[in-house]
Each structure stands twice: as C-alpha cells, then as structure tokens.
Image (cartoon, rainbow, N blue to C red):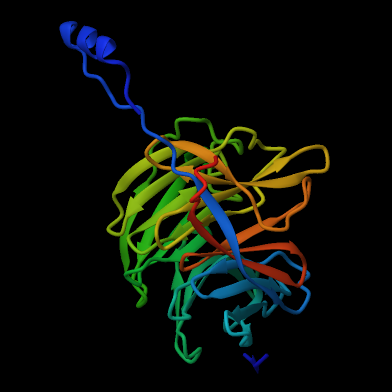
Length: 329
C-alpha cells in the first residue's frame, strides 16, 4: 500500500378496454439482478464511517478541530491524509465530502474565526492537492456535497435567516464551478412525503453523481434526480421499512444509474440490499455472495459500476451488479 501524507392482459380484456376508450398499459416485468463478488480489499481499520465517492474511500478524522484530516484511499491502495485547515480559523468543521473519478475532492463545512464568528464554506481540492478553491457560502450551509460528471460542485443544505429562524429556507440545491462561481440555486419543491426533521430533508441525506445526473436520497425516504444543469428529472419513493428509527445502511448510485439501498431487517438489525427497478418503480432485493442471514453490511458507494460495501471495519467488498441469468427474483 502506497502512502502519502497530505406484462399484458388477455385479448378479451384488451377488447373491452378499447370499447370503453381506455388506454391499456402493459404490465412491466421486473429485471432480475444479482451481485457477484469481484474481490475483497483489506484496509487500515477505520474509527469513523467512510463512504466511497468517485474513485476514493473518504472519511474525516479530527473533525471540529483547528485542522480536520480527510483520509482518502483509492482503488489501488494509495493512501493520503489531507490536512483541511482554513487560514485564521480557530476551529473547522466538515459536514460533507465528495470526490470525482479524477481524484478531485469537495468538502462542505464551516469555520470559526478567532473572535468566534462562524462562516459556512465549500472547498474544492484538485487531484494534485496543490490547488484549492475555498468558497464562502454564507448564508447557505451545505450538509451534503458531490462532484458532478461535468466537474461542477453540487451541495444540498439550508439558507439561514439570522434575524428570524422561521424564515430559513430548507432543502436548497446549489451548483458552483471550481472557481467558486454560483451557477444556480434551487429550492426543492415540498416533498411528497414529509421530511422527518422539522421539514429539513437534507440532514443525514445522500447526494451522489452518475455519468449524466445527480441523485439526492433524502431523509424523508424519497429519491430525486436532477439533470447536470440542475433541472429535476424524476422522483421515486424509497423502500418501505426505512424510518427515522431505522435509517438506511447506506445508499449508492452507479455511473449507469443503478441505485442501491441498504435496509435494516430483523431483530439483529441485519442488512438487506435493494435495487431500484426503474420501469416498475419497485425495490428488488439482491443477495450478497457469502453474506449470512441477519448479517450487517454497510453500503459505501459505487466505484464506477462496482458496488463497494463493508461487513466490518477494515474490509471492503467490491461487488458487480449483473443481470441474473436464472431469472429468479
């Protein structure tokens, strides 16, 4: 390991429907999918839960200190510790991280000055780690960030009104270029299912990117997709059984727009993996090779089209999502 610091109804039914002037919709068959183990990867044991974004496994250490550390590990085992400090700040907090396929990193957070003034920010860190752009985003504060396929920075969070808290704008999506220019700001329309946290759908939510869109899995168990220019494309209800007391064991979006959610099951809080079948809008279980019933599994993300998950600290499973030739659901 290298290391560097830093279907259809009957004819009779069809005829009747035509006589009534109704449109008959075909019954769509679910795709059958399965997971295949590509390989196991062993890493240093982590103390804070990581996530996979772009080509990097990311986690934050020493958060809410003068200089948090972004721990980054790529698919080849190359490891970096990236010091995330803000000049003239007494304390820095990281609220979200993301990465792209070229190795660049985005960080959402805040910093306190020496006289205790708080400023929210988003930072872009180039693949060479030598170039950084720090964007002061006040009054917007990001809780989740990602890098889209076109290189733009996406963030979801709240815009704060420091005079009257009731006027805070929640569930805002903002886009920036890597030079720090604000490209768009969108207040996401009221969610079809109520958010659990006082109307705030972004706390503990997942913002992810594929080759042609950005997906947001909210804490109200709803998945919303956007085009790269910030236009909403679609919404899907999340799997049943995900509630405030049983949040998902991770959510992942692949480059090919496969969406996987880890759902807690059983008294032992084991994990079941579900894949969104887009035509039917249903969630289909997929088994994990070698996973025992009732076992826990964390979904970290997709490395391209390879799912990265973990059964325990220090071990990664790299899994391929394939069509199931057996046709079993």
